[in-house]
Image (cartoon, rainbow, N blue to C red):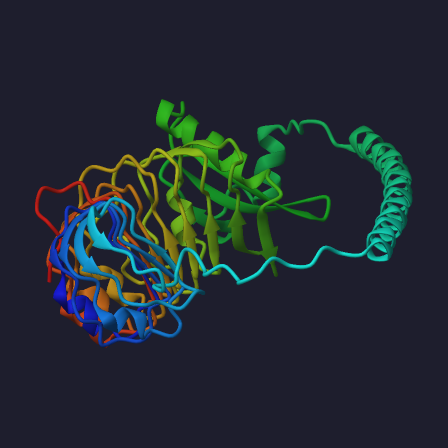
Length: 395
């Protein structure tokens, strides 16, 4: 059991369950724990009295260990889970899961009270039914109006636009270099003006686009046609396309969206390669979980100085270790890589991230020891449960 855990003064929630931890619980000097989750390990010894003196503690879960002797007395507001510790003696006044019964049976309510309660319940039910009918009537009216608007909108929706190469040359000034917006891996993007409307035109760098180029182009179109692409002053500032059915790979163009602040692509089927994002100094959120990426490229976190939140959960990554590049994100508050095939030591440099508040690293193959740098950090929630490595977490 990591004895250094007691020195993590800022931690509020820690989950080290299912990690084959051994040894006694430390004497906790910290009074900050709200949840301490240590179930399904092989902890021995006693539950320290110091835990009962943590006034903000809400949950202590030590189920399925090998703790023994008497439990300290906890307040009744603390949920204490101790099942699966055959040698642990539960005192009748230890608090936690159950409270002492009150002495004497309560006197039965009189008939007038019962009648009053019944009348009140009837009135309440009648009011509820009336409100429900009124709500359904309004809802059906709105639904009817919405269906009319939707039908009208569908009738007015423009069909596919077909343009000749001559028209494309005219709108882009013959694909002038002055009209170039950006360059992707398989083409060049030009700005154009079509009857007063600004458009973007992508020109393939090949006579016939390769299969990769076609797939990338399709992915770009899928992304840009969605409502989750948010622009301001002709700049894309947010791409929020979670659960949008997008597949294929991301274009390198995404790495040139210098005004982008949010990239949320979780729960799709997007695959490698991840574009370089080092130019996106304004990017604050990256949510890529539950996609098909299998590699985090070297230097992926370089230049992300404004990054505050990142989620890499449930990605089929080749086993990897977190790079120190992440420390360039000095404002990082939330980092999550659950079930992301992280291996090796828990990085000590994470403790140098002065704003890091929540760290989710469950279901990986990380090993000990717990970084000593965490003791001086403001980290409040640490999740390291269900590590699959043979080496035990200690510290």
